[in-house]
Each structure stands twice: as structure tokens, then as C-alpha cells.
Length: 282
Image 1 (cartoon, one colour):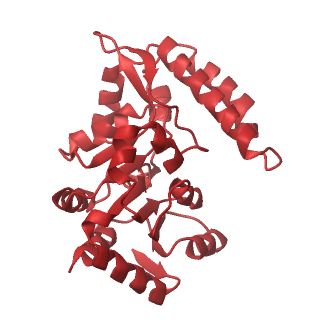
Image 2 (cartoon, rainbow, N blue to C red):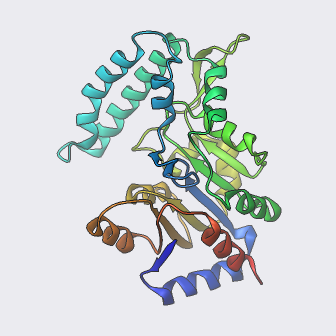
């Protein structure tokens, strides 16, 4: 992977400070899709969990048409620059609540998600497994954000590689399941594209109590919008790592402008692993 650091002196200083403060002062924020996982698999762009469900005929007939109708209502609001953030948040919450009800009505099952995980359309980057081992060894909290409509599957991916460690926290949309493994209701706050940040953690005490005193943060994301995951958190030191999977020169420059470190090329995770080890060295 090509590594670009816009301000080497700044990054060196942040790394020095993180190293000085130690692992007890650090937590990691990470997006899931195309950040911890590859952006493409076998030459195909990694699909979302929802699209795999839809295209794999897992759900009841009529799901795709109804889901698309919701998209037509709410997506224009999501991308309209003239609509306030408050209105967007309200609309996105309505969208995901309606979509979750549709998934339940469309007979979403736990077995459907297990099938998706084992099909291999979504794969962790090489090096993620070893990196997770390091975070677990030092007891560094990893908060994984995903606005996916079926966030229960995110944890399943970690379980598949036997890395569902206690220091990993999943901020995703999840369901309650009946004795037959059918989704019957939603669990916890709804996570969408405009509240995928640390403000939502105050509604999840288990996570907030773990990280709120750890004021040094390393953030990982594959889109410039992922930087917003830090919103609502009073940090001391903040290092932003962007994974630039694909795009033109204009987009690349935007990544280089907004992230402290840019990893280009949809490659492995070894650079992040090495960086983490450098931070943890005394």
C-alpha cells in the first residue's frame, strides 16, 4: 500500500505523546465495511449486508420493492445540502426504524446472517487478526461503528475468525430474536449515517464508561465522513487514518487533506499493525 503522511512532524509528535501516555489512555474508533474489510473481493466491490440479503433471496417476496420505496423517500433528504442536520437526523432515524420493521416483516432470521458471514463475500484485510490480538493483549478498547441495517452480522464476522474479544464493542443496529431465530424487535438506539459518532455512546453506558477517560484516540475509516465518528468526545490527542480504496486524484487529495495518514490501494492491514506497535513501544 502507498502511505501518505501530510505532516510527518505532527504525526511523529502525536505518536510520541500516545506512546508516553500509554495504552491505558488510548481507545480506537473504527468503521467496519471496507475499513477492517477489503473494499473488493475477487474483483467485485464488497457488497453491503443488506444487498447480500436482498440479492440472495433470503427475505420474503416484496422486500426489495418496499426497501427501494423507502430509499426513494429518504435518500434525497440524506444528500440534500439545503436540509439542516437536525432534519436529516430525524429523517434518517425514521428511515432505519421503518426499514427495521420491514426486515422483521420480511422474516429476517439469524440463520440468514450466519449464511452471509460464511459465504465469504466480506473478508477481513490480512493483518487485522494480528492487530486485534495486540489490542486485546494491551486491553485497548476498540469501538466498531456500523450503520448497517443488520449489525448483528458484524459481530459474527469477528466470531468467525475467533477474535470476538471483550475489549471490542459493536455500535450497530441489532435485533432481538425469538426461539426460532426470527427477528422480532430492535435492540438499543438506531444507528444511521448522521449519528454514527461518540455522542450515541452516552446512550450505551457499558461502552461510554469504558472509554470516556481514555482521551487519546486513533480513528480508522474509509470515507472522509468517518472522521465524524469522533464528534461529541473531548479528546487530548487524535490520530486519523484513512483507507483510500479507490478514486480519482481529486478525491485522493481530499483524503490527504483530511486524514493524518492515508493508506492507498485496498491492501492489507500491516501498516496499521506496525503503527499500533510503534505507539505501544516504551
